[in-house]
Image (cartoon, rainbow, N blue to C red; front, side, top):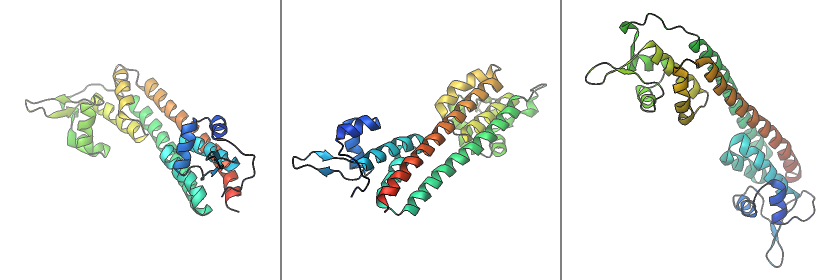
Length: 239
């Protein structure tokens, strides 16, 4: 039962103050993000401060961790020991920390790769699918997928369509690998790679990675804000 002291709030009050529609508030209650509301004799829902704070925490968490994990965390606040809630929050922070580390490595690698000069290209400098896959630490099927998506397209050097990657194409594959490792999806990369091949590598990759860094920072700030709100709910819920 709600223990945070507050005035009585209607569904529409929660919706307005948390930035949701009335139906979304009802859905959050249905999904356990909000604890069950009390009802009037006429069947109308009665909410309190704990419902508002839970909705606000979920909104921030959805930005920081995604909606599925956000629901899991806020439900745990209402249903589980505090230690389990803290463990879930620790895991969310750890995932962001890993993303930051991967991004830093991607920025370093992309800068080094983009600065490489490709001169005096010889046929012997090209690599097969299996050779490049081994060098990158990916499966050959991954390279074939990147080829099909137009991300790193090799030459076909025989009537059977045998793939061979020139140094320039190998560099494309290395950049794609680093950006994929940093969390970039196929669609944005498909739009990015043609520009990279026209010679704007360091600038364009840098811009993409800067966008990723801004996204991580925004999610980290959202998670921090959610933690502050959750501490209020925990203080009223775990007494």
